[in-house]
Image (cartoon, rainbow, N blue to C red; front, side):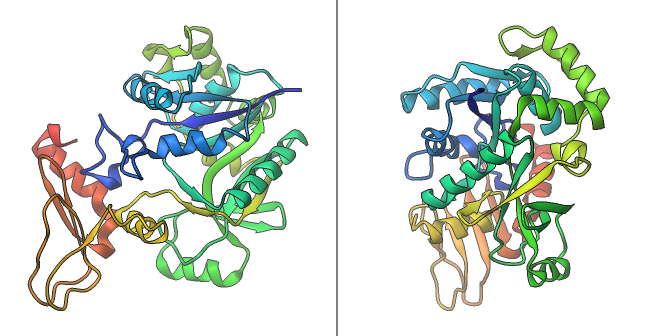
Length: 340
């Protein structure tokens, strides 16, 4: 029987949390969550549920991940180090190629915050059960509101009917009211051999280029010339939307991808982390927050403002525009590449 391996995906830059999240210090490694990072919380919460870990990352982030793992008393030896990012489908394919066929891959992003340990354990064990039965299991999160920043899964029991992209507000409300949609968590569970069979069936070009890249890799490091030949695609588009063996574990644990300042503010409220944000001070100030080294005061009538201070710049947005930070980051980077 194979081992259960937590494959931790860490390659993103957290662009929607700019300017506190940068290329050299992306959000998953920011130790602002009670002096731990999201990466460290990911490793810790899965410690009792898996037999081993594997990191899928790049060289810059590998160094940070190793340092933060050692702070927890852990050494992660299994790794895939990408010289060029090609999205999640190639990353997971390379990871699967490096494991035993019967190994169970528990795929988790490194930048999510999760609460309710018992519900989480129950969901993970259900997913492992489905994986052992030969299914590809995905985790659907019971939606709390009509969120437009997440993808959705339409389901019937454990059966997945369809995957839906991030909806507009009206469509998100329709999904919630229907009662048969969950948020797509980006977490998956399957046997290495099963995933390889599916990627080979539906995306042979990704499979073949990944095999070649893996065969030319050394100690998990994948050469740039071979990495660049792998077609870029997400696991959702490449496999999940086509596969006939997809199952969903409906999950009731507290979950957030902390992908925007809105979600970061909600996390601070839900987990009582009062050190992350302060309310903007002043008369008749409504729903306005600051992450700043100094107190922030505003004139009467200011509402729904978020102010974020970094060493070299300050971000000021209205709270309902939190999803547009990625575009602001790109604008700032054009003016000064060091801001990225």
